[in-house]
Length: 478
Image (tube, rainbow, N blue to C red):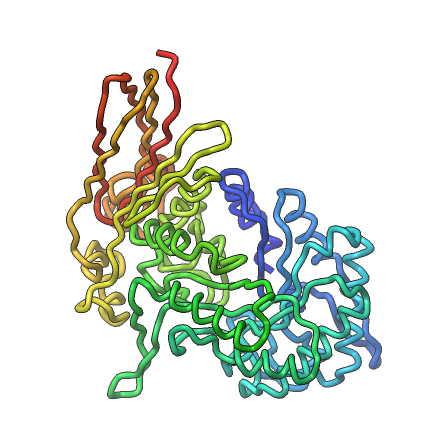
């Protein structure tokens, strides 16, 4: 339902304007908020108007649906178990044939509205995190496989070229490199000869133990966890005979918690840069969760920076995670060199873009969500990270035939970190309009330009802890 809100749509438009993504995925397509299905006197009634509003908007700004098929419409549900504040039903259908009919009516509708060529470029993912009991009743694998089989076959009966996959399992607290239900799902697909075009799972890098009183908390794995996961999934696919499948990891962030205060910190910019850079070639997509803090799974957060998942907060302020993706979007098509915390790329016009970062992982002492919770709204949040010095990078300039222009775009806690600017204001729970205008200035990156002559032989750049710097180098007429 959030996708129907004008303020959420503005946030998505901002993202697409400045760093366009190709696809977007959402929960709740078949939830009551979307009003797509009801029964009267035992007869189904369909209404696609809200779905049309959402998809029309997305396509108008250049982003396609990665369709998550769920949750269960209330009148089609076999039980009353729900998840989230907005109560998405997580039980199997009470009538499997009617579920298949619903899926086929949905597919026929979007093909009629958007055309077969367009819809063939979409992806259809069956459910969300069914290995997690709150999201699928009893985490029943056999019931999920029936859902997958019936759904996939129903879609393929409409058009065999439509792309369907799963199991969309959550890797939270899982064994590193092993996708929960991955081996079982692929084996069942092989045994039953089920259609599958892509494999999906959610590689969150966290563990969720319990303390002596049985209360759960969260810790974070090492800085290489994403690469370990992606390489492990590749091995699983190869061993199952499915190395040819597309690999779409349809949720990912630094944690699966919508109240993780580190989501708002400067840490997120180099976290996103480093993980996406290292993960290249091991995935067809890695989907950041989510666009905006207008996000109601656990109600909307009570303060402007509450640890929400979003690239932007409720007021539309760009968070450090936003800048992480912006930096990645500015890189050239050709990789010339890369190494520890740097990447050198070239654009088709010959200009260079060099990305530098200073990533600080969670420290051994601070790696505990109970510690983080005590630091909400204060600079003590940064105590949970390794305390590293600034990094110096030296750019060797050789073979210059003329002057060059270097544009430096800088992010760190003092430049572009809106959380730190909000903390400087005293962390107000409600931001006044005039203060919001100040934060909109503070959330932007620092940009400077220098020109070097052909006689220059080196140039040094310093990157602060939790910082990212982009150097755009081009010929200068001056």
